[in-house]
Length: 226
Image (cartoon, rainbow, N blue to C red; front, side, top):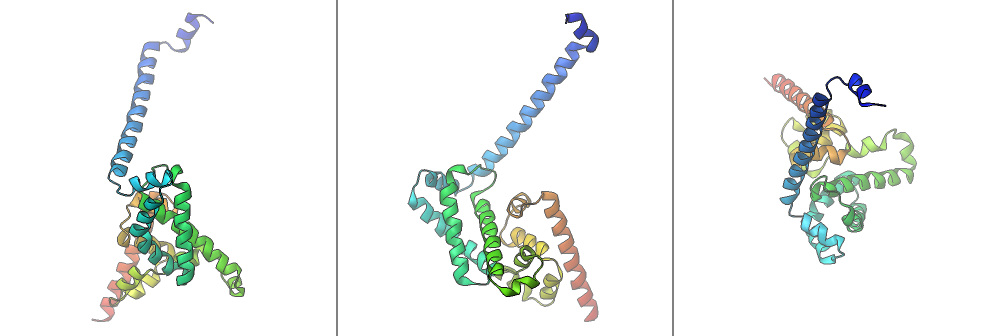
C-alpha cells in the first residue's frame, strides 16, 4: 500500500495525529491526576508504614496495627455476629489475613478501610457457617441481608433518642449499614463503596433513601404527638 492510499483514507493526517496526541495526553494527564490523588490520600495514611513493615514480616507492626484498629473492628464484628467469642475469633482471622496479604496491598484505599472490608467479608463467612450449623437456618432466605441488618452499638446509641429507634428499624439492613459506615465509622462515600462492594452511586442512593425514610417517620411521629 502506498502513501496515497493512506491519504485517501485520512484526508487530514496531520489533524488526526494531533487529535490522537491530544487524546493520549488527556489520558496520561487523567492517570497522573488519579495517581497523585491516591498518593495524597495514602501519604496521609498513618497506617501505611505499618503495612509496609508487615510486608517485611515485622511482627511489631502487626501488633501496633492491632492496637489501633482492633477495638473498632471487634465492636463492628460483635454487633453483626452477636457472639463475643466468635467475634474475637473472626478478628484474629482478619489480622492474620492482613499479615499474609500486606505485601499485596494495592493502595486503592486507606489501610483502615481495607481492614474494614476484610472484617465485613469474614463476618459474612462466619455468619454463613453459623446458619449452616443451625436447623433454624432453613427459615432464613438471605443470610447475607440478615447479617448486615444487625445494628451496631453506635446505631443503638442513636436509637436511644425518642423516635429514632423506630425509624432505624424501618429502613433496610443495607441502608442501615451504609449509614453506619459513613456517619459512625467516618468512611467517605468511596470507602463505603469499597467496603460494601458497590458503586458510589449506590451508596448515595442508599443514603438518600434512608435519610428520606427516617425524616418521613420522624415527621409523622411529631405530627401524631401534637
